[in-house]
Image 1: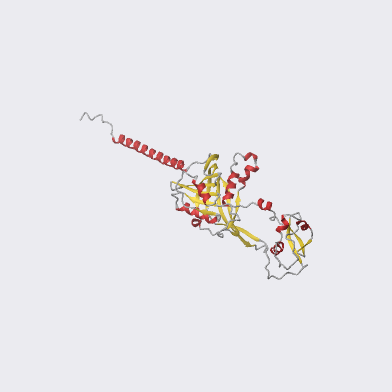
Image 2 (image 1 turned 60 degrees about the vertical axis):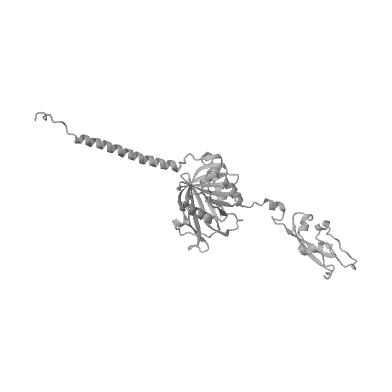
Length: 366
């Protein structure tokens, strides 16, 4: 930065203070980064009148930076060292891990109103989510990886509806996986439940998991039975935990998302946190939970290595598809129908036999 000719010269032999970050050493690049804007103007090359015979040095002697004070342009500059913070060095900035989870939510064609309301409820509860239009195909699910990439999302929830009555939920990390396919049961939306609980739109939740999710890591005897639960827990955290870097969040935590394990299924509940002044001790507060909704149950079907497909990592042997359940119900009804028809045939034959009277031996006499 250059001085103009009309600018008055500053008085000589004045004192200035220079504050720069202390990174362990007195010189080097850290000393240059610590200059203020005014001091940088003094350190830069300047122009003076041609009549001025005294010309200052063009740059600061770096070897003098380790001293408490040095002369520059006949100005005594005192250096005050400031303790360095964690973010001053570039290595610390690189080591900072930022949670940048973004969720893509969409459904397939043929979704009914109940499942559509459930999808809208989850979209409202997750401010880091983006909603996409319905997907036409149900076989080429690899297209979802491209949609997630176009929307800058690294997670995806896909509601797959079959026969207008069965809901399957895909939870995947795009584009490399893994992914989980759930069967969703016992769906109750927030509008349907009409609970008294409420939470702020865009607030961050607290995720609460059952202790059974950690049994595979704690108990070696339960590793075979619960080996898939830590992976499911990690994907649920990535999906439902709202990061601090999200633009739509509010700086409040006022609700809890509960994931409990019972009967081999994952039960989802959402509660509001209510704080009230304690009557016994006014300094403390009583905390209570009021359910907000929605409610649903997740039954794990398979866990895949890739996103929306790939090698099977886990398969639930206890899962029975709803088609086979309906088939068994129809067969049971058909069995009862067959039994009724057989009984009616036996009754008709018995009535036919009863209508025929035995022959009278005296009929030939008369």
